Image (cartoon, rainbow, N blue to C red; front, side, top):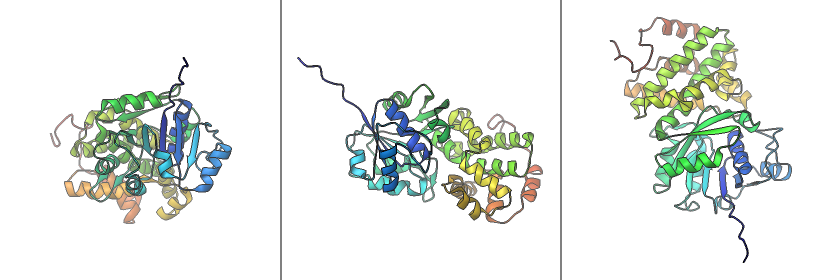
Length: 345
């Protein structure tokens, strides 16, 4: 009688950016056979031959269990879970390309922090719209990919209404340096990840302009109030914003030069145009488009978001920073902690 070898589980990561690659590496370290789908054939060859993502994670040695491929069908076939680590502007395109390749049992996870403008859809809305019967979840938290890839201690949140999804992802991604917490408020977790990018641009700009620690602390805390106010209007649980996907992600993004959105704000604060700042970054800064979408949605719904409106005025209407700062400091007085008192009480 022969003993059968245990079946090796397969995971798929669609998108070879910094976070997608970091997630793929953890999955491989945890024993998964990992398919990392990328558009760029040269990047595919680099990872398979040298085990390095030279563009996004230079110097990080990747696990040999990662197989990079530009074949979407081959990447997805046989996987227990498919992670969509795609910039928000391309998210729907890639999700729709996987229609017919994904089977109804596969778990689908979004790692993307952004918003689709038409219909104000989050990435989970797109996944559920295209795959209405599949189990779906989202990952979000204070997850600067370069630090995770280097094995620095970090944590994230897996949010899903399906306990099986939460348990599976928690077991699949947990390791000695990456801790996974669970939440059922998928919408709140996802909105926290999208909205904080706006405020990282603001704090980057403030740092470049030489504002002090008191100013930064004020901006971060008022950003949290503004984020939760908007998210609750969309049906999220305000308590979600006290956790990793809310204040945790906000702080990490608003104080770190590793944050793409912080760097864009810093460059603008130093005198570069928005176009120059984006070009010099060389990566997607989700907060720029999110700012547009959130401002429009907030204005239509009558939600008070002074920081969003101030940043929009600076970036797109040519208003000077000192003018919007003066307006913010002389505007209506508000309650310190959102929801602790009725507005105007």
